[in-house]
Every structure is written in structure tokens, then in C-alpha cells.
Image 1 (tube, rainbow, N blue to C red):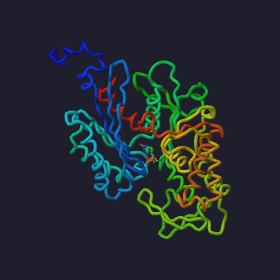
Image 2 (tube, protein in one colour):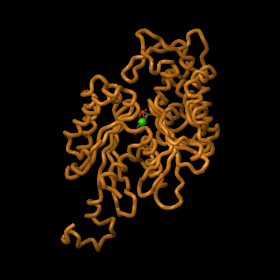
Image 3 (cartoon, rainbow, N blue to C red):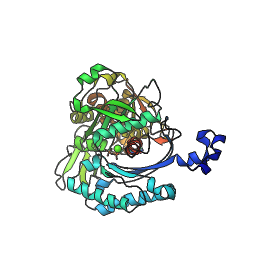
Length: 406
Ligand SMILES: O=c1[nH]cnc2c1ncn2[C@@H]1O[C@H](COP(=O)(O)OP(=O)(O)O)[C@@H](O)[C@H]1O
Ligand SMILES: [Ca+2]
């Protein structure tokens, strides 16, 4: 500031000084190109002093379906969905800050599963949309995110929003994210044992807000809820022949329908003659998860934050309140799975996959990760009115790398 602007600063506490309030407000735009949808998060931050962490003053959030991967053969059309969302940011960010506001898109499992060529075509169309916008386009502004970063950045978000990354006595919480195509588990190990027993590629050191965290994290590609449906049906990574029917005991007996995922059409249905219900369904789903995941002993005794499809399916079946979320034990998912699978006609109007989804969640938690029946899960969509998504952590990381925050 020039001296002329500063004269009144003595009369205000620093954070109320009108000049400071303006100068310390900044924006960040983060796109989450997920396998089932594309979302924009426009964050407003205030940095009140260099000693404190920036504060999130607000978030504007919008989403579109389907995700970019559904446009694998029409990359320009895919990029148009991004353009429509970015137009919201032009309205939300004050024009004098456009050039200082970075815009980034990170794609997750949907694009990881596409061929390199198709993924790159989509990403370069998006890059063009960004270049034509009035915003700051950093290097690497468009790309596929590393699976390990997806978990770490969601962990940063949740622990930042719950106040665990500032001050002494940090009691961080682990997180579980269940997407359409992949699933992540991330926590800060408390015991030396865990570090010894864990494969090196499950451990990542990460620096954020002047602290270094050595986190346990892994992203399991193909273990998201929708990929798991295909795996249960025996259709994941299959060359699908036209007219081919995939059947499961997790689906209503008489059901026959089709379903599009990742640009491929699948026909599926129930076991017309054979068994249906929780027991046969659990055995089917078990084949998808058993022995496929690393089981850190430590997590059996800690509670986790869970979101995405854990949240959605718990809310769909009234295990939690749709707006406020809730606290559950692993066994609640199992009970609900039994109730739904053994009364399939009553529930299938909502979604024919409800039994399969709840059974998969149960098997993933118990047989996949090795959680106990009484492990506590906190289901949240928002903390302090901000979405619990990896996008906030990613925006902090971006601002840090651009030297815009401390
Ligand atoms: O910002 C968000 N707020 C709330 N839920 C979100 C947000 N982003 C993604 N989700 C949830 O993520 C799940 C879909 O996963 P996604 O499409 O991100 O697949 P992926 O992570 O496997 O690429 C859904 O449960 C959806 O509600
Ligand atoms: Ca996701």
C-alpha cells in the first residue's frame, strides 16, 4: 500500500481494516473431473495474517453429469460441459481478480481407465477452454491426478475443516472415499508397527502449512462402487459382446435392463431361476474384494470419516439424514444390506442396485479393509458448510505452489 492508503490502519484492528480485508481476499477454482460427474468448486479465501492458516470464507459448488469419460469419443462436447461451469466463475469472481485467480482441473479414476489417447484428447480440449478464459492458467492446469494425491488431499480437506491442522495437540482423522471407479483410504499412522508393516508405496510424505505428514494412503482402481457392480457381474474389463447378459443374485429376480458406464453399454439382470438375497449376494461380492486390499491393523481401533457413495447409500436408506449426515458403525451397513437384499421387491423401485451396493460396501469395509463390526464411521458431506472433497486440499496445494499462501 502507499502511505496515503495506510493512514487509517491505526484506527482498526488489522483484520477489520477495509484495505486489508480487500487485499487479503483471494479466489481459487478447482474442477473435479470424476468418473460420474464434473464439478466446479470456487473458493473464497481470506488470509488474516501470515502466522495463521488461510480461512475459507465461502464456496460456490455446481456439478454436471455424466463425467468427462462419457465423452471419450466427443472431446469437444466434453470440454463444453467444463466451459458452462467455468462461466459461473466469471460471474462469481470480481473482474479485477480474474488474472490472479488460478483455474485447475484434475481428473480421477474415470479418465485413468480410458486409453491414453482418448484421455489426452479430452484434457487438451479442456486446456483450450481454460486458455480462452480470463483466469490464471498455471502449468499443469489440466491433468489426471495421482491416486495417492486424491486420498492425501481429501485428508487435508477434512482435517483442515475440522481444525486439526492448526495449533498443538493435533488429533487427525482418517478418511474413506468411495467413488464410482476407485476408492481411497488415508490416515496418519500413530504406531511404529503400522509403518513397519506397510508396503513402502502405501506411505507418502506430504508438506502442507509448514508441517510434514507421513500418511498411509492408497487408491484402489476398479474398486469404486460402479466398477464394483461390473466386477460383481463379471463384466469389468470385458470385451462386451452385443446381446451378452450379465446376471447376479444381488439383483431382483425378474429384472432385465441396460446400463452405460465409461462409454460402454452393459445388459444385466437377476437370477431368474437361481438364488437371490443377502447370502448368495455376499458370496458373489466377496470374490471381488477378498484378499485384494492391504489391511492395516491400526484402523480396526480408530474411527473414520466417510463420504461420497458411503454417504449417498447411507442417506438413500435412511441410515443417516440426507442433509446432516450422521454417525454409524460398520454393522449398520450390514444390517441394512440384509434388510434390502432379503426384501428386494420392496426396495428395487429406488434402484435395482441397492442390494448390491450395500452388500459391496459391507464386504469392502469388513473383508477388504478389515474393519470391525463396531468401527465407527462419521458420514459427512460438508463441514462448516464446505464440501468434504479433495478439491479444497488441492486448491491449498495449488496456492502454496504459486506462492499465494504461506
Ligand atoms: O464435491 C462433492 N460433494 C459431494 N459429493 C461428491 C462431490 N464430489 C463427488 N461426490 C460424490 O462422489 C461420488 C462419485 O464419485 P466420482 O464420480 O468422483 O468417481 P471417482 O472418484 O471414482 O472418479 C458420488 O457419491 C458423489 O456424490
Ligand atoms: Ca471422486
